[in-house]
Length: 332
Ligand SMILES: [Zn+2]
Image (cartoon, rainbow, N blue to C red; front, side):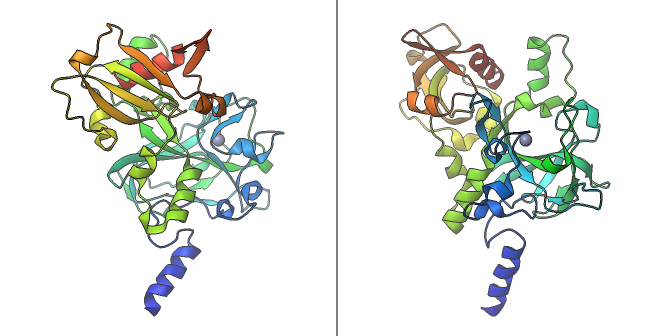
């Protein structure tokens, strides 16, 4: 009993309560404290801390931020950030970018995890340096130091010392045929990061994950968490085979009424995450068009419009070019 209590205490000290799968990527834990937002997040230049959170938090709610900008706690004598950056969970290194100039993420690292049967990727950006011995394919433990915080980026406007942060994402991989899709639809454009191009990563709110995990304790299940996203819209796509179905079978519902699958009805959250896919019979897929918009949750669109996946023309909702683009990649 005493030993268990010590283990719990140790775990709490290290930023994770007993049984929690996802750990905070730095020692900054203010996200769990009442009124701690200001000490946890860094806003964009001249904007409040809320612009460092996830979602439609930028440009008056019309620009999406796909991760959390977590404030630095430790600095060297010159004021440079030196916080250790740690793996959020046990995982495998899948991508390291050490060519700072090739990305607005600067130096960054992506890890692959499987949590409650769901494949999820964590991304840590603007790093000063990634641990020298790390390479793709290597396994890491949750809480293991993988990098040092920095402020690298290839953007014209540099990240100032006082805004030093790690940009942290939790992502789903949309399609492992991304390279072929990109060559077809972005002819002549460079793709420096292969499958790890930002267009191929679908982010979920890490803050919501951390808070749900802390509130629910051992009952927290990541698959259930994802399936409980708020619906922005439902679409109907033709086709019975695309990589998402195989990669995330936990989001596919069974439909015993279906004899031959002709397509899928898909619920998307505001960010475009396809979190629920229901098979439809060939006889139900009447239209020749590859994708139809079935319904829109107008209240959710009013709250979170920034991905601009759908738009209202007169009294009719339709998928935007962005929305169609996303479905094109998803079903390629
Ligand atoms: Zn960021």
